[in-house]
Length: 376
Picture 1 (cartoon, one colour):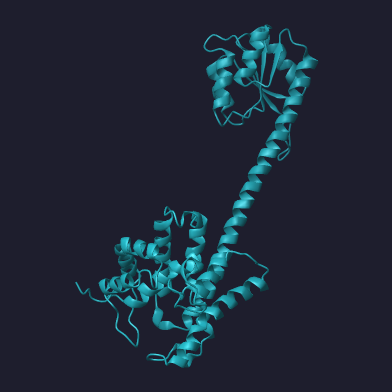
Picture 2 (cartoon, rainbow, N blue to C red; picture 1 turned 120 degrees about the horizontal axis):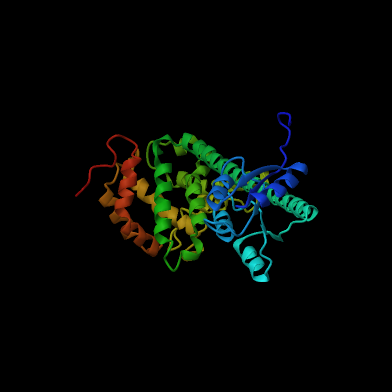
């Protein structure tokens, strides 16, 4: 009798339709300490094989009335529940072709009758040892796969938390932007997905890149935390001198993200797009932007996407120095900047997606009134 919690001896399912064959096999197994189950036909064998506790090994005859052992073995191998149970054919058939059919059906061994008990027990123990090793490796691999998935999810959460914390810090300094961060994030992802199949951008916009750009977009104005309140919160237009100070938010943002990377040893990390966006989203296609006056494709793609998203949202949002533009007015302004302020192909994508932009703006509007009244 096994005490609670102690391992049970291996369970062997013996499948044979001849009682005079079953009895000596079962006695041999039980004397060796194995537990046994008996099935006298294929249907019963399949039922017992799939019923808990599952057998650790199956001894299977070939010649049976309802279905032969080859058919039973194939069904066992095709069922995920029983496919890993080793099957040993135990049969009077001793032709080489019969043996080959047995292995083709999925058996691990083939023993002919009359049996030699020491031979049968040795082969059973060998295959149980192999099965135990296989089960261990399968369980270990399954554990490792789950552990990798857990670590990946954990890393993604850390990345998200890092970006949200940094973006929230910037947002507290510039309260009038409201849902600007969320809207621009959605705009950028919409543009990137639309351009994913475009010949110019396909190689730069994998699904993973789009996800990182989407996550990084909220950090485009992180550098504003370094702009003095007298300028950042000024209720009116900035003087030329004040604007020069405001322009430094791009460099401040890039440097803050780089410092975070260095502090935590994350060189070349997921924040690479965040640095591009923070530093270069104010550049213009014709080279008249800041901080470096980059032009054309020298401007990082992530920053070119953000430029369209940021300007559209700034136009439709009210500021102390201007009323909100209507959606139609904003579209006209951006269209006028095609090839000067904005990458022409990205601007064309915006024009194709303008209804989606309007929908995003309405869904994440700063007030119950949503966008400014349409001019149409």
